[in-house]
Length: 154
Image (cartoon, rainbow, N blue to C red; front, side):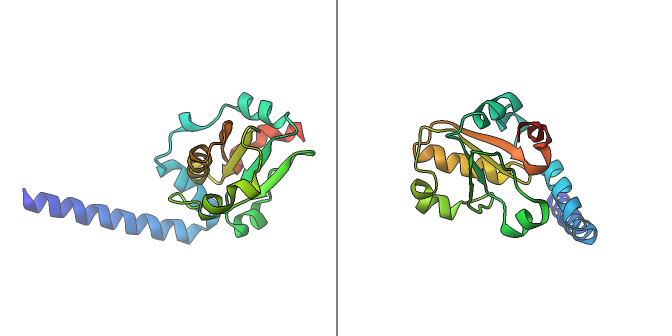
């Protein structure tokens, strides 16, 4: 029994190492796709397209981008005329800037906040932080690459 457990750990470690090498060998585009495929965040935690579109029709809505600066420079950002865009980098485990400065970045806790990142995982962490701080309408729009349906709204 002990040998089986050790074998499983070795296989798991080898698989993770191989996946890491595979991802790094093919660059950032594949990294995002691979991450989304292996991510534990559930699609059901994303807001519906209709909810996001409805929120973005409200001029009081804030769009919160929680990606890293290099991701924004590489892939651009979601913008909508008349809507405030805010950037606060997060990781899947924490959102330090939101923890200390959410009230300054997004003063209206009653107005909708639409959050996105590359896959939706960091956006989910940001959503949890904002809800804990009393924001009432916080939507995880998912990943930047999946927001093509919003192009018609600009």
